Length: 319
Length: 293
Image (cartoon, rainbow over all chains, first blue to last red):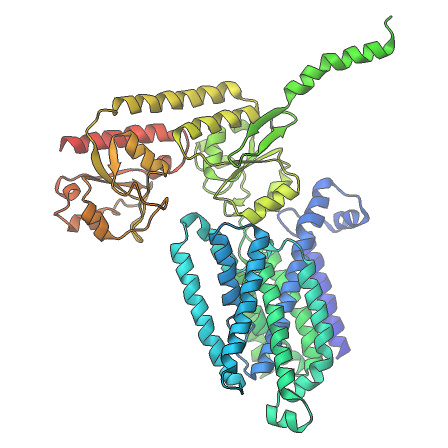
């Protein structure tokens, strides 16, 4: 168990180092060492400290956040097709961000707007699903899917009426782009805190996965646990989407990939998701900025292109 | 011979004017005063229009990198790329060690431009919206690049050319025009757009000139209602010129009945550069043909 986590940790570190070395300008390993020691050419130093390190750390944090949020959503809704965006969170964040772009606000306000939109979406779905009192995962899922469709309609409207020169920026935000992340510390801190918070609950989550009745019978306070998971998953997703736009695929597939290899114990899966999700996004982002350099691709394209064959291979192998 | 502090003072006084003269300053479109310690030698332009304007200012040999679609003048095609104007490869840009980066106000992603600003790269934002704006920006770019002679000459040539056209068509018969930017969705330009201003220069009345948006999306119905006498569209080299065929179905339209469906090369008219002069002359010719019919 610990061994698999350590293995994932080593792979994550290797991916980060690779990302720091590769780019439109390749920094050789000796060059990397020079820069870390404080010497090295001015160009390499700027590239590393000002461009690549924040971007790579932000990519790692975002990937980790999305993967953990996806795992939590899948446990909460007891549905393997659940991903962090299924309850309309990314839609709400997108509406907030696009509205800010439409009215010409600066990047900080765009991020703030996206976060506010995500939180509004969370509260909205929670409130609507609560309805007459008791809510089940299927009610939550249904409400979330419908609200997500509503956000989608608002996004389409905004894309239709926006002046043409603002369109590329909006589309790139919707596709997800790690280069928007200006500082990696908020998502990194949120990721670290969330792992610390959720690990004690992991055992209860294992029990909850069997069903609410069985969980209640085994002494788990089901309702408070479900609310906590919902709020935590929403917070993680909101942070991820605010940092890098709506990057798809990571939240859905990474938990499944890990389950095929490591089994379904949440105590391992949740931290493993953080590491594996981060690694996947870091590798995808490195590819996105180098494969047809100097053209830059959106990272969401690469995550899907990388992830689909990997997942199919793992699925095939597990039979 | 003389006391050495006096010698030192004389040296400083002698070189002070030179030091002051070497600094070049110009104001950009965002109102920021951009000063360089000496005329720029390594310039990166982040839009095809900026590339053209830089070459027009006489500083083409100082441009070290451009973005996609920088296809005019032909010399620009040989320059290395730093990505697309909507997505810049910042690493490649920094690797060129530019001492001036020319950005496009509405074209470049604000997040990346902010990051460049934070990294201390000298930025100059441009986006001319009027004929005088085109001349002024060429002059300012030539100041920053130290090529004032060519730049000011080119700017003056453009000014004179536009003034000539304006005078020639001052008393021309006004003719309703529709400029089709795109077929589906149907888009046109208002008079705030440079194309709209070209139409006005040639004595044309842009039937959608007063629309609030710069590039409004309209329906065929309002065009039929406005009934222009001329329909113009931009043609792209290599593509088939069939974007105006769909109007031929409406034989009742004045423009269709008189056969006034014309194409003009799209690239010169879409960019706020000196090529607008030639493009304007061409459009004025077409409007003259339409006036005859």
